[in-house]
Length: 220
Length: 218
Image (cartoon, rainbow over all chains, first blue to last red; front, side):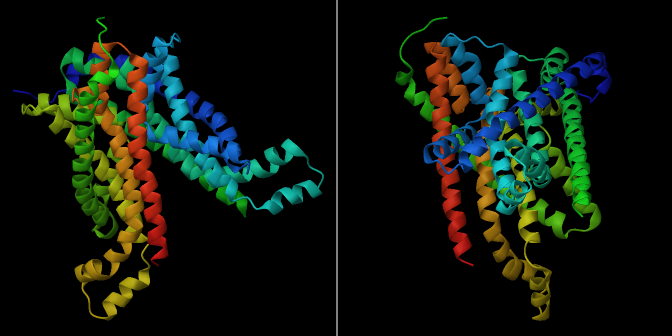
């Protein structure tokens, strides 16, 4: 008769910190890289130059509508057949970044659309130029508006990073798969991993809420 | 690896997989909608302890990666209850949990978007809570509810690809199987990506058109 017993998987717990670290590092790199990729996409979509805007729109629609698991298979197995052998780590990262950039560019676009044209005009009349206007006038205001959706986006990337386990990156989801099949304590390993993911999501949400509060206070 | 034949010879395998993917996601959406509706309403109008419980449900199942849900539903439930679930049953359970968590958020936002004055007006003409919910508040919330629900459907359909992990031969697993017998990874996975894209893009474009129509109806 089965009995729930967490002690049965206690010997696997020392592997947890390492796997959580892998999940967090993968998530952090993917968030940063996808945001960098998302900027030119968002800019292209708002450029008013039809071919550029269409290309950016095509990117967003394409990568929002393909399951991230299938993307991973295309990069890991498909590209290998075409002669480009990516490691499990790079294939996972590429899947996460190309997927996340599509969502992130939409968030940025929404953020930019809230900036009144007068802001740029005022900055120009003060003598600010090009990237100064972008970096010191526009971006800080965009950032304030997008904090809440950006937080959700980070959580989405964190959850998505679990695909890496499918091809064998030793992240938190992989810890669960390995522990489960090694000990046959599937329920226990599921619950432990699930609780940690929930905890991580709550931590990200709390962090972003704190940033949001600070940004709101600064506005007055 | 034995490589034989052409990817296109296996179109029937892809079609079967696709039908199962669609079947799975529709069952999950309908059951998830009913469950999510109750949870969302309980979170909006329920007494405090019920509200806390339902919030915990939503927050939990929104924060667990789908890969884990399928794993937990298939291996976890089978081993801990002794009832061996088929990959299909386990996948349905995992997807209902995920869909209902998403839907409950949508429902809560939709019902809260209905103005407070509508409740007062309903009360003033003598309607009780349920009558007001059914005849006054509900119809207004439905309009707000439809577009994001279709968004949830696309998300659920995409996440159904994780059912391949527990051995269900839906579209993604069908692709993996064809790849094993043909050996042409690139064609197979690009084809998979293409099929998912066409379906999801049509659904989300439809949702956008619907959203415009609903907006005009006001």
